[in-house]
Structure formats: C-alpha cells, structure tokens
Length: 32
Image 1 (cartoon, rainbow, N blue to C red):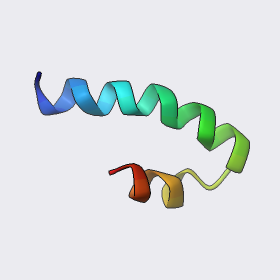
Image 2: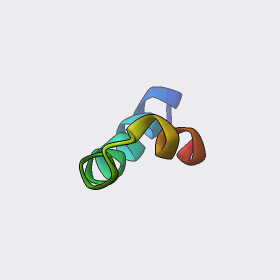
Image 3: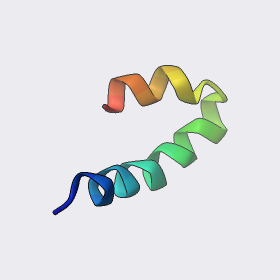
Image 4: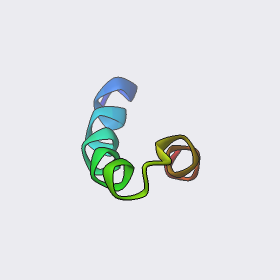
C-alpha cells in the first residue's frame, strides 16, 4: 500500500470527524 493511499483512507474517515469537530487540523495531527 502506498503512503498516499493510506492517507486517502484516513482522509475519508477524517472528513467525517472534521465536519463534526470543525477542528480538522487538531484531529488530523492525532490521526497521523
């Protein structure tokens, strides 16, 4: 699995959290 593909999958889940928290930057850091 390429690094980009992995981020893509996380991004799909991250988008949902981003809409709920509206603080994607903070949640994104934890996901990474």
